[in-house]
Each structure stands twice: as structure tokens, then as C-alpha cells.
Image (cartoon, rainbow, N blue to C red; front, side):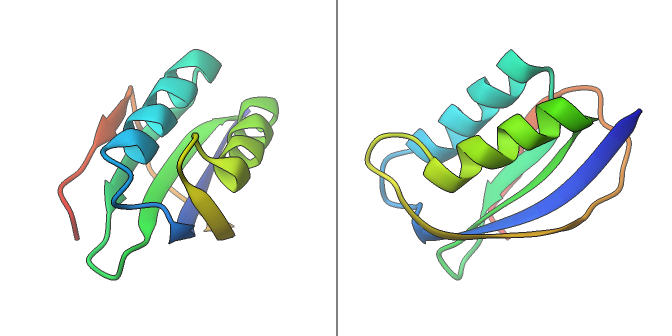
Length: 93
């Protein structure tokens, strides 16, 4: 059964190159998670992740750590929605 979660990730998650977004996309693809990721003008990273419960749990665990160079302070998680076929980058919002 597919689930979706909306994430807002705060901390030092921008300005570490494109590393956070690209690493998140790579991890999502590795886990078979679909959705999107983008920077927000307030300095946070926003994502929508969709997949089975186990993959979502693994993606949430990864999001709380982030890639090398990032410092994640918090990951706000809310119910998400949407039908996605891949994991993509969206423009900054």
C-alpha cells in the first residue's frame, strides 16, 4: 500500500552545494520512493515522498541525518498526497 508524506527540513540544509537535494533524490531512487524535493526561500528544504511504509520510514530516517555537510535541526512531517512516477527536483518556492 502506498503512502505519502510532506516534509519540511530545517537546519543547514541549503548552501551545502546541491548536495542535500541531490543526495535525497539518490536515496529516494535507491529505496523506490517517488515524489519531489525543492529548496524554499526561507532556507528550508521541502519534499513530498511516496511509497510503501517501509521505504517511507527509511527515507524519513535518512532525512533526519541528511548527507555529509548538512546539519538537520528538524524534519516536520505531515500527511501528503499525490501520484508520482519518479523522484524529481522542483524549482525553489
